[in-house]
Each structure stands twice: as C-alpha cells, then as structure tokens.
Image 1 (spheres, rainbow, N blue to C red):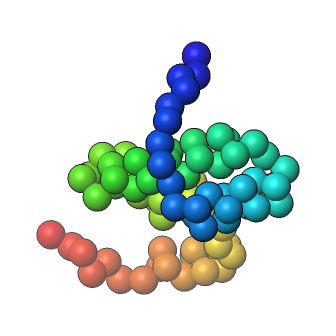
Image 2 (image 1 turned 180 degrees about the vertical axis):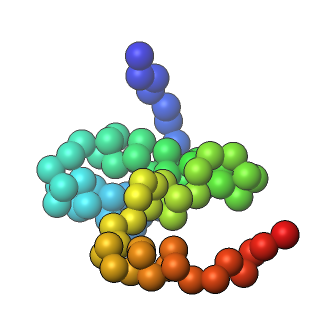
Image 3 (image 1 turned 180 degrees about the horizontal axis):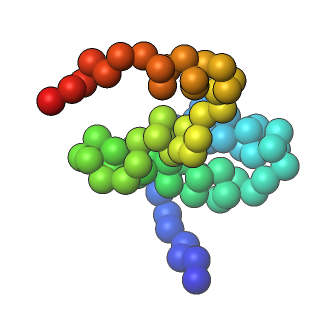
Length: 81
C-alpha cells in the first residue's frame, strides 16, 4: 500500500521531473520512486551491500570465439602453486 508524504522541493527540479515524467509517459510519483530507489541502492553499494551495477549488468557468460578460447587454454599456466 502506498503512503502519501508531504515535502518541499526546488521548483526547477520539480519542473524538470514533471517534464521527464511527461516525456516518459509516466506519473510523477513513478519517477520520484524510481529515483529514490536508485539513490538508496547506490548507498548500499558504497557500504558493500548489494551488487555493484557493473556486476549486475554483466552477469552471465561473455561470448568469445572458439579459437580464442582454445588459444587461452593452450597457454602456459602462470598461476602454478
């Protein structure tokens, strides 16, 4: 359930947020919620919580040509113990 809040905001910032919402064809509250969520998620990353955006956006395998993989596998092991 959503909860109403009251706050004061810079008029120029509010104008820009409304224009952005119109451009994206979204309600202003959606834009504000998304921005707040992104802000709070970034705060978690700085404290070590959550996945950094680079990890999240590149998760999974990275496609590589078969010949490149074979070449890498044939190289000498330089991490020997």
